[in-house]
Length: 402
Image 1 (cartoon, rainbow, N blue to C red):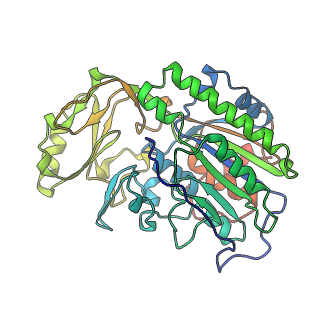
Image 2: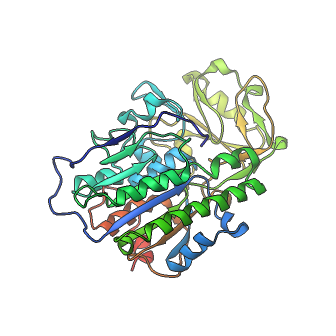
Image 3: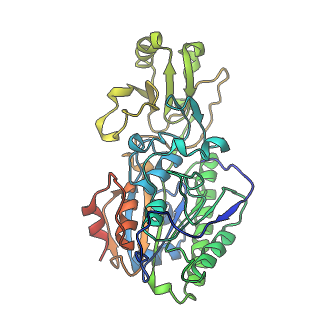
């Protein structure tokens, strides 16, 4: 996810949904979730990260597999709803929605704040509906009133806010009077994704950023330990996806193979979504089958493992680059070395991280890699609320909790 800066807006609304269940507030249970965008599975082992190392010893550490496509927006919303993108409707960072006759892009404020793009029920709404106050800080989907509702506290994205200032906000929310205090907080930092896009995941600059983020975590825990409720808080640190290096020798420019005017919409990158004119779909498909370093799928023939391809917003043709390949559809080539994600979500380079510690988590437990959409179930289980309909696996959740 590239950094996009918007004006800061804090909105606080006290009171839950009209359908809230009374007396469901879990007085002794809190969950604080931090997402570090693009924090790959191996970053911590390559740098000096004493805070994350301590978190692993105190609780649970596991690999975190993204959903397909392994991009920021569909994955954050999958974690929130417990649904695959094919089921929640935010099918990629950018796409055309024929049901709305609108285009969604992460830089379009009108689209990002439009609840019509978001299906399912995000966990902050699930909690609020059952009388549990929640707060979000830049989490994807939280700026839209999904189903007419939002968290009690939420913020509009502003990437210029210093990381420690974000920590200060989280701590301040945990210091609110009991009747206003959120028991679920989900917040976000856009690194090390942003720097890895420019420098590649192999860069020493990426590891320097990882070490900086570890210090932010240290600041968080130092402040949190002073809270009266510290021993009641379950902390989760995770990432939405990993990162891979792409190189000029594998670069693919579809403009060399296909006429742009034969498509209604094109969203290039990893993966690339093509919305061809009806009479051109098969022709385009047959041409793309011969292009090196990519795989092309008709919408209804995407491999079953991706749990993808039935939603109407998905393009008729999906171009999935091989690891190390970047795809564009431009008049001018832009072949260079960089970092990207969005690839096959089962590729190890796409794997993220999951660290968790607190009264509800096992101690010193090294878990197997799990699908990241299980986060919805994990939070619901800890808070003692009923989850919304989801694609998670309760058996996976049981393994990491006491």
